[in-house]
Length: 124
Image (tube, rainbow, N blue to C red; front, top):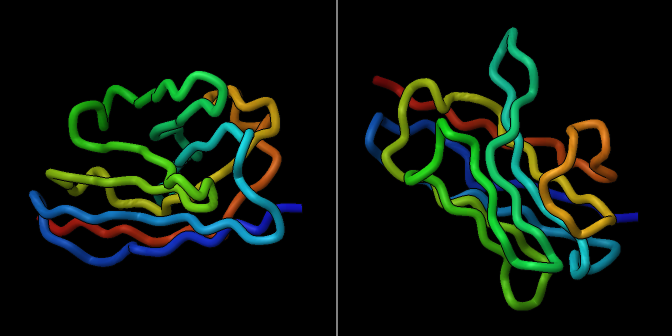
């Protein structure tokens, strides 16, 4: 069992940056595919970014490409999401998630573990 805990959210202004972290406990994240999703009030949870364990390849939603960067640390126990040039439409609860195949980007129902989320609010 893996427990995921997100941190780093907050209230910022448009154009600011935030770095989200996701720490794992109970088991190392090594060999897991990892991803960030977000969910705004009244909307479905949507994919933001993912990183494959096997290839190291990264994937991004078109809406964040060029502004966000996903990474995992060398100890393999923390996942990050660097968010630059934030926009009001980035306002959401951000969740980290892990899946056992190592692929990284899989259908939302196929992720095995989820964190509780961290709130990001971007004011205009």
